[in-house]
Length: 231
Length: 80
Image (cartoon, rainbow over all chains, first blue to last red; front, side, top):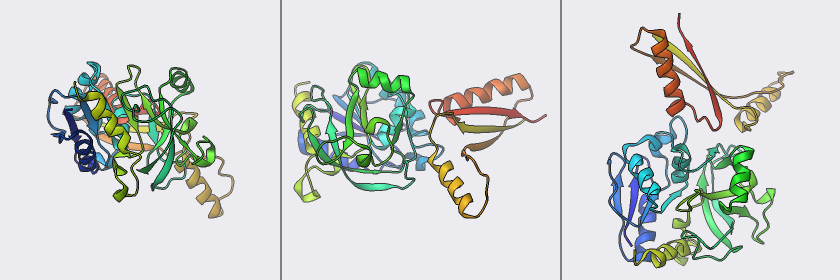
């Protein structure tokens, strides 16, 4: 599996996700600087977490207009899988790759802790390593993760199976108490219409081995390696 | 030409920062504060003397970068 990680000024999870990709696929990703105008042919592009451009104006706003993003959007349009983690998800909504917006957390605080997520479906490239309805423990680390979309968009996402993950209790129950940031419908991650783009606020790359405190994130990267191995 | 741009949250979009500011004003003893909505204010000096061209350029800047039209409205004011 050939993968690329896009690096913006202020990205800080780019090396973490590179470790995760190499651990699962046996091949280190190519790191691509934001000023590039092309992305090498690959099976997967990752927009990593961090604080690109210091979150100036709005989280992800500057990075979404970086030269490399034209190439990323074009590759997504051709069907290349693109994964956006945390700041990567914010960049995706700012770039129009995914609908809605990520607003300031409802409690106004930066939150860095493990949360439970319910996997909505397993029949996707991104979630094939999990089973539908499975509850996984993955960390969040953000100030602007409060997912918002107008009611029409929200309804469209819900009825077309485009919600990937929801914040939930350890029992799997999706309720207000398990919602860390005020996201509508407890949404933690969504797919694009074609299903080849996933944006999510949690950080699966941070829990990929027991030495790190857990390995629930590993299945996502193992899933890529398995499904993209022959590509 | 100088322009002043106000960016505000759309109606229906929750504003937890505005709410927190409202609560803090109450704590200070200011009564009668019903709602607070927080926005952004941006000043731009533009090398353009044609008002129509300036306005068109500024509107495009707002739509493409300065505001996120999923959640925000913008208003452009030009100096006389």
